[in-house]
Length: 101
Length: 475
Image (cartoon, rainbow over all chains, first blue to last red; front, side, top):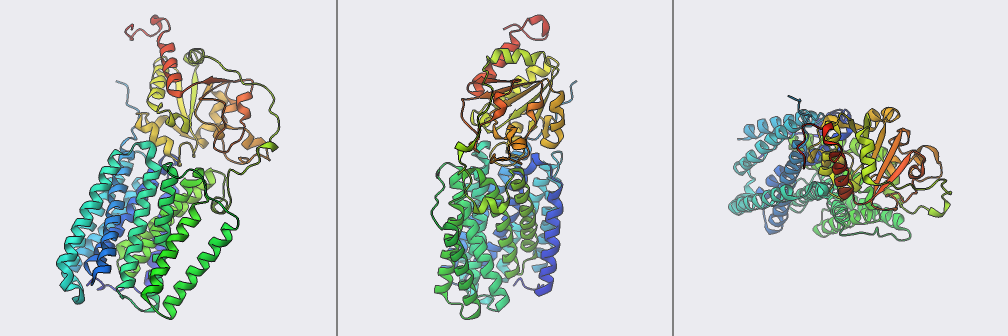
């Protein structure tokens, strides 16, 4: 059972607030040339949703829950893998000028 | 077992934030995504440890659930990995839309399992669940429409009278239904209706928005998916989901606003007005005439210039001519010409898309300059070479208050000594506006497919007296 640490009310709001500021600050200084990879990169990061979907599916107690949970894990996994591959492919291409020998 | 999950989730949350931070510079960006990837790998692997802590009611289902989890993971990861590897870079924006929609769908699915499974019935948890369900579902269906539009599967925006009013009613009905479910009853039928209406709302909101505005819309849905994930994180009491989701939620919101600003549109303008309905008859006569020149002549002028600034637009990518362009740039550089690229924030299909396309062709990122960095340099440039770009170099954005693009930041190409515009034909840009730059005294048009024009240019410079390029072997 996960809820060992219980995050209630205001603690949740503090986490949300600090995370929101963090996201804002991290992005604020990004140069425009990286906007597309960055959008794709943040798209990858919310792929963490697959972990929640796995939890939900493992705790399913009936066919409807299993079906929805299965779809959740499937979509979440695609979000993770697709987000990673696409971002990595784009960033790999950014190379500086080679120094002339 | 729980402490292993907790530690891995903590490390993952750290790596996500640190990785995103590293992605803010082209030097470290690659390392950033790889680090975030390790965090994700750890979090996904330890999620199987949930097996040991499932609720007693779920124990009889555990073997089936585990099998289903394995199958779903393998299918989802495998399909998306293959898809992500094979998609061409020009199609990147719709891929981001598609993967984002799937994330939204997963968030919606978690909320659905929690709701229909009857977990967490206290009002706060139920409210957060319904919010996550709504946002996730809207993000799923909206992103799919955005994907279809960018992929060319849905060409025309569908609009009708009173659409905004109808969307408003549907939204209010959704909020009303959600409130009813939380306050009065958690009935399964009401919940099912709730999900269907939320999905419909995503479609209805996205359908009337034109293709040119889709990047902003995707950025917004990206932020919304992040928010839905954060809310699910609260419902599941999982801090990693809460933090990662909220970081993406706020970063995505900022990115959305930056993009909208670069396109000179406010967000509400993108979402609620119908762009592209400009009355073209209102535009005044433009003085001057179009002056076509041969590609070879333009190339030779650039060969003897001191400094050339290249301004690429989506037309370049549409013609698949990035490689040829870089070949031409290298030929110029070999002849001692200083070459820089001036990249408009919205060049390509998505802000920053052009930089990725040029990087794919091998152009080093230190030749790529943003609008703010390059704009003062046009005055000192001998030649500005505009390829497949139109609205982003239209001086009307500075001068003509009646123009629909008035106020949009543009590249000051018109200040260069000589301008060459490579263009397929005499058509207009996305905004549907006539470009007075093309009629300026110091501007010449080079008509033709970008690929063919650049081939001619490369050849023209190479064909110059071989004595001037001694290292080159005569063809």
